[in-house]
Structure formats: C-alpha cells, structure tokens
Image 1 (tube, rainbow, N blue to C red):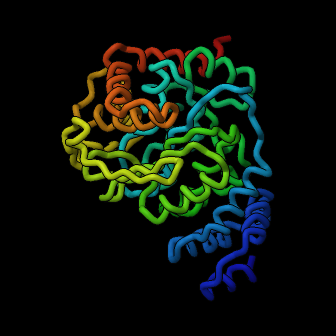
Image 2 (image 1 turned 180 degrees about the horizontal axis):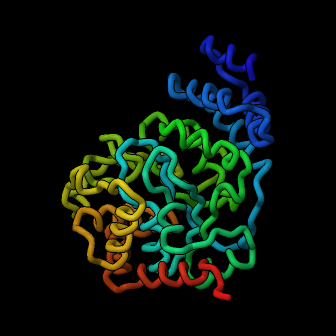
Length: 336
C-alpha cells in the first residue's frame, strides 16, 4: 500500500490491474484503517479515472457472491450518494412504486455512510432481515416485485471498509462503486450521480458493459431527480435530455422540501407517508419523477407522460404500499 500511496500522492493514476489488485487486498483485509483512510482520501482530492473505477469494479465482481434470478427482467434504482443533501430515501421509495406497477426491481444497497439513512437503514427500521438465501430472494421478487441485496452480504470488500467509511463521514470512491456492482448484474438501471463528470464516466462503462442505464443528475447537485432545478438525463444510447420540472407537470421543489431529517426514524416516517399517499406534494412528486424514468428505462418506447401517470397511480391506488407491505412480510424474521 505504501508504494501505491506514494504514487498517488505524486498525482499518478493506477492502472486497471493495480486498481483491481488493491481492491482484492482490501477484500482480504490486508490494510489497516489508517491506510484505508489515506487511500480513500486521495479520491476526494482528484477525480477517479475510468481505468481505476473499472479495476475496482472488476475486483468486487470477481469476489462477489452471485445471485441468479433466471431470465427475469428487473431494474436497479440507485444513487451514488455523497451529494451532501441528506434527502429522504427517494430511490428506495421509487423501487416500491415501480413494483406497484407490476414491474420487477432488484435493488443493491447498504447502510448510509455519508448520509443519515441509507436503503439498508430504512428497511431494517421496518423489521426487514437481510438475506443472501436465493430461495428467499426469489420469493420476495416474485411475490412483492422487489428483492433487496444488502451489499455486505455479497461484496466482502464493502463489508470490510464499512467502519472506516462511516468514521470518515464523507463521500469516497465506494459511493461510486456501489451502483456498478449489483451482484445480479442487472441489464437495466436508473442511476443518479452528483456531478456531470460522473455521468459521462458511468455512461461509458454502461455502454461497454451492455447495460440499459438511464443516468440522471439535477444541475444543483442532487444524485437523483430532485425537481429543485433543471435535470439532465442520459440514456443507454448516449442521448442527453435536459428537463425543467414544469414541462413535465411538476412544481419546482426546494431543498428543505426533500430533507430527510436527523434520524433514521424521521427518514422512515417520510418514506411511509410517500407510499401511503399522505406525504407533501414535493416529496411525492420527486418519487414519482424518479419512478417514471425507471419505468421508461425498462420500456424506452413508453412516453414519459404515461410513465408518470403509471407511477402516480401506483401510489394513489395503494399498489406501491401493498408491494412494500408484502416485501416486509416476506423479509421479516419468521416467528418461532
């Protein structure tokens, strides 16, 4: 590690092979916390390269515990995190809205590192017990429309760096990696990023890997469609669209409208109100917008107006809440 750190301190990038090897060593817990902290901090001081990100991804996928859902068509809805906005769990909420339309979602997530409430935090708060058991995951996907892959169960390196990430409390390159290493390797993905440079980097990787990925970024810095500003959408083909919230029938929101609170309990309460149809207009419409672009990722020919209508109906009809209740029931500990 010492040699690599000196190289990086001299502003030199790692090769794809070097990046792969260092992540394998992290997975094998060959570095101490101080070395890990120094290594992560380098990527706060300069941009990650395509070779580095791809090499890190190679290592995590090489060591992953694979899952197999057969030929099911499913999407992952995920943000990089690290935008510093501390929103409620918009991506996770959107998973159940999409499931409420009859589509399938296989979400890869983790505890919050640079935010109060990550996907795993809010689900665990509702009594969900994470699993790597394929039979249970299959049943969850079939009966609720959602299977949840808790990252430490499937990627040893993500587990080994968890305490250091939490102690640092700032975004790091593991934020960038999470969306790329869903062990199912889903062919469809809605991915939110916190800047335009990452948007182009992820699009390059998605095209190389044959992933039907829609990448979104709100121009005021959110790693999702926040409706607080114009937002950019990049499709799997590389086409770019710039939207104003108003042109899609949404009112513009403020940062305060999307604040997730200071505790997991507060974030979970907002999550529940959105699915129940009792949240504020801004909270609901933000989830509807992200859900709609996920739907359109699965069905590119569907007009965005129709995708928005279906997402809204999933909430107002109670279908999204039903999908979540089934998910919690299927993924809660079995009473003795």
